Amino acid sequence: MATIELISKRCKGCNICVAFCPKKVLELDTLGKVYVKDQGACIACGQCELRCPDYAIYVTKEEK
Image 1: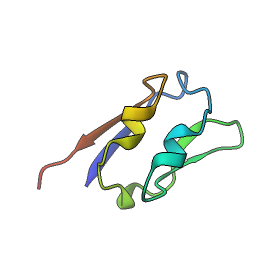
Image 2: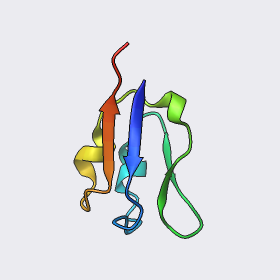
Image 3: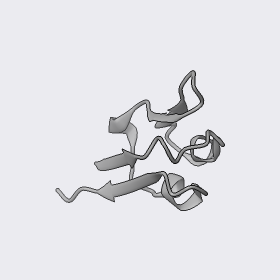
Image 4: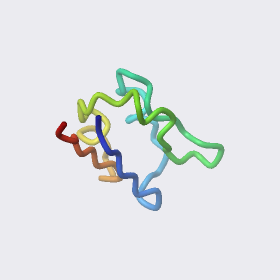
């Protein structure tokens, strides 16, 4: 399980995070900002965080 923190005011809607997410956890809303579509599917791979050019996404892996 993971926690995804989004800073929407930094997001410019480039869609890079959405494209690189292997589990399709993220999506863009009607305003072009990223949102978490399916939190439970996140595997905490960190691809969205690594590829975000605006540092708008932070993924924290939760220990069991």
